Image (tube, rainbow, N blue to C red):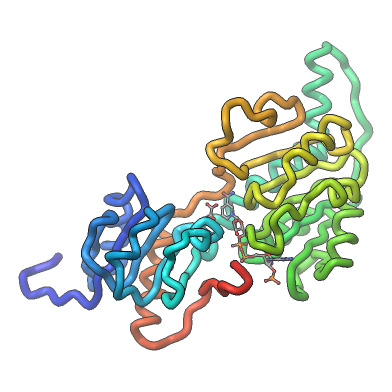
Length: 314
Ligand code: NDP
Ligand code: OXD
C-alpha cells in the first residue's frame, strides 16, 4: 500500500505495447520501491523494460542505468539505430521459456520418432501399415545453441533417451549430450542429426547459417525445427530441400518477416508445420521477479547475468 510518505527509490519505464498495464500490475507486486511508468511518452526513468519499443524512445530516456528486454533474443533491439550504446542491455534468461521450448522440442521429437506423420498419410489413403519399432537411443537429434534454452532442450531430449548432440560457440558440457563447438563440431552435428533443432541467437555470425550446403550435410529425410529466428535459415534453400524430399519436414515457429506474409510458400507446403512465434512465451510473473532482482542487484553495485555482449550480438 502506498501512502503519501512513500519514497520511491527509482523510476522504471514499461514500454511493451498493449500489455503495458498488465505488466505494471505484475512488476508493482515485485517492486513496491519503484515508481512505474507505462508507454513511450513517459518521463525519463532509471530503468526500462521493453519489447519492440518505438525507435524514438531513447530521445526522452536519457538517464537509463540499464535496459531490460522481455525477450531472450535481442537481435531486434540491437538493430535499432538509436539504441543507446552506453546503457547495459539485459536479456530475459528463461523467464518460463525453457520449459515451453522443451515441450515443443519433445513434441516434435516424439511425433517424428513414432512416425505419426506417416500414419497420418496412411490414414488419408485408408492404408493399414504398421512400421517396426525403433529405439530412442538410435534416433539422433542435434541442437544448435546450448544456452539457457538450447541447453534445457538438449538435456531433456537426452534424459528422454534420444541420442543428442549439441553445438555452441565455445566448449560446453551438458549432461548426456555430445557437445561440439567450432566449424568441425558443426559438421559432425549436421551429418548425424535426423532432427535438427535451431536454438541459436540471430547474429552476424549465424545469419543464413542453414544454407543450401549445410542442408545438404543432413542425412536424407532429416527434419528441421527452427525455434530461434528466421534469419538463421535460407528460406529458398529450405523450400528446395523440402520439395526434393531431402528434408522431409520443417517445423517453423519463426520467420524472417513476421507475421509470415499470407502468400508465402511455407503456408501451403505439405511438409511444413507453422506456429506463430509462440514456441516459448515470457511468463509475466517470473520475468518481473527476475527484473526486480536484477535491478536491486544493480542498485547494490552487484554483478548480474544476462548482460548482452554487443560485440557478439547475444
Ligand atoms: P543464450 O544466449 O543463452 O544461448 C545462445 C547459444 O547459442 C549459446 O550456447 C551460444 O554459444 C550459441 N551461439 C551463439 N552464437 C553462436 C555461433 N556463432 N556459433 C555457435 N554457437 C553460437 O540464448 P537462449 O538460449 O536464451 O535463446 C536462444 C534464442 O532463442 C534467442 O536468441 C532467440 O532468438 C530464440 N528465442 C525464440 C523464442 C520463440 O518463441 N521462438 C523464445 C525465446 C527465444 P556459447 O554457449 O558458447 O555462448
Ligand atoms: C524471445 C522471443 O526472444 O520471444 O524471447 O523470441
